[in-house]
Image 1 (tube, rainbow over the protein chains, first blue to last red):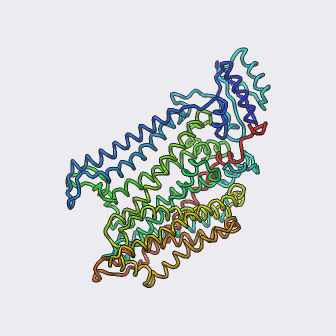
Image 2: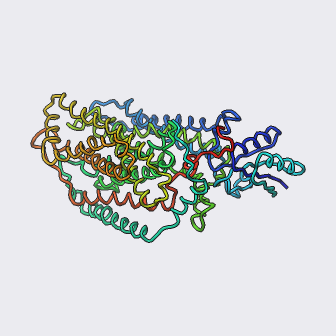
Image 3: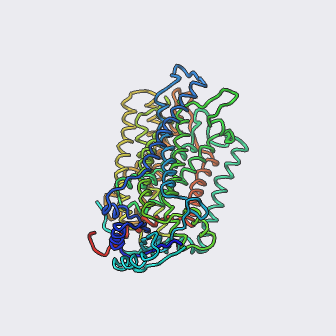
Length: 174
Length: 447
């Protein structure tokens, strides 16, 4: 049986101090919030790198190649002489490549976002772990989820959360 | 500079206000929606069907004026689409906080405006079912799309813009849909649960959401510039006097932004009047900032308009002279030109006065004139230049037929119908961003 603890906070500074303390003691901690706390978390933990940029870069490069090959390749396959204009023209090719760079970049960024954020996340999916649900944290509270909190750990975690100012602490088991 | 945090509302209040607006609907809304929907069908789709059945002869188009009001509308609606992306992307990159409350509405406007852009391509096509000719694919006739044609650039630019805008709009809505599913019941709960994709709002998800927004913004911003530049090149790459101008790309982009911002102001005003609770979120400060942006863009547009005329005169080319005389000194173009200058150059100067910018009614009025002026600008370019194309025996005045006028008016109603229907299904205000406006709750100040 897996035990998870959920602490609800009204204030973000309280939540972050609890998170810092529990992380320092080796617990696996997840913050859930109705607004992004990226700046606040990075203020304490430093800036985090994201793999997303590689998705974006890959999409952009792929799009550029797609546009270039489409415009130049089809000019080679279907030769259309037009009043002395070049068969392979750089400027129009660049315009097509520019647009397809953006299109593929945007699509790959979206796919990267889904992959890294673990979305879609529905019951029955291979990566669904059935973590604690915290509807309040999608509205007006800030939640701290501590995984693997069974046995003696639960009392200790509850104590830390209450000491740091949690308005509510829940023990969830599955 | 960071704006002062607005603490007039709580996080829960934001959720409740948005869901109440979406779910508590009086009969007046349905009556207005039905009237607009029926009018849109009557004025837009029925005349279009008539035109498809009878042929392009029911329009005012004839040699040499084969680009008329449909393409004026095409350019106009591309312009309306621009402010949504600009507000979302550029103001996000520059970390301008006042964008938060207005960005979602502007993005929604963008999407529906691009839908109209697509429709106007089809209304302009004599035989819309031949669309497949424009799509590049191998075929037995050995025909292929010319990638050197600006019309092909258009296909790529508009379809990229439509896809990117739809992704940008939906992506930004995911946390809000997750938040709303807890308040919603019935079909809404199911819909929001599915569309929110199981978003939980974890620190990891927010982190990647922020990064993705920055990447999307960085992509979409140059896209805005490229889309309207390409629309401008539809004209500027030709040799027709009045079209062949190197200034057209920045001129069109500036005009697009001016009309787009005016469109956003009108949308926000209607939203505030229809739902007074939104006055908490869309404040006089938003009008003030948008008024300043409009004033600045209007001044740039005025400069470019002057340059367009002056460079034409300076070219000292008889064809160009004829075009300018026709555009500025002949009736009815002269009257339309004067109205355009009044609407886009003179009237926006009142935005220098703070009281005018902070007043919803005056901003609405100025924006309405700007929209009329910007439509006229496109009208004075698209068919007007073709009316005086080179040799005098080819000259012909253009007057839109009732079919074209009806489809133009119907498009406005169709746009309003789509917008009205969507704001009852999807949040028109970005919930999590407005919550950010209220501030992050800290026990100790200055954290």
